[in-house]
Length: 219
Image 1 (cartoon, rainbow, N blue to C red):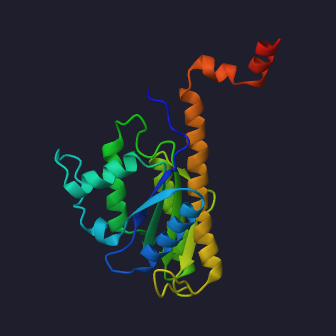
Image 2: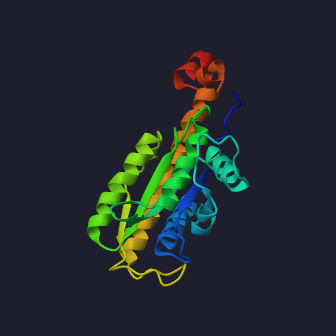
Image 3: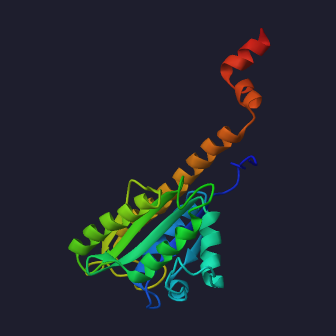
């Protein structure tokens, strides 16, 4: 196993959006990714247009499209994720769920699925009922993929909150909530990576770095 470089900036992947350009879901995700960047992460967005290019995931088919492979490789190297979905009839959208189903290709990895990765969850819905129920559903999906949902998840009622442009949101509290999702994803990634780095250090090096070992060397 190669030693992990815990000094590099973690990579946070954003997955989300709708088939509609400039959707509230994708704009909310962008706010969260900026929060991750402010916390020290590099980010990459797979928005609605990209997700719409993915074919229906068919596990019995051995061949994957270039777009599927691009998503799989990006998540494989990610340190954390943020997933944003609209609430459609009480559930995660088919567009987003298909992207998550595609991650079945990570099942045989050393870190299978989303293992060891924090995952921020965002739901946009036209009403509070769907925002809450779909957020719970999305967090359950993340658990099933062995990910770690961040403590804070954002449910946004687009009946009350507008995203008029990429950089504007009508509710400052929502901006803060989305930034919190991104910050927590990045902070957990930094913590996980630091822990993995200590696990890959040679035993002698790790022991020598402890206060007790340094004291014994000084005697």
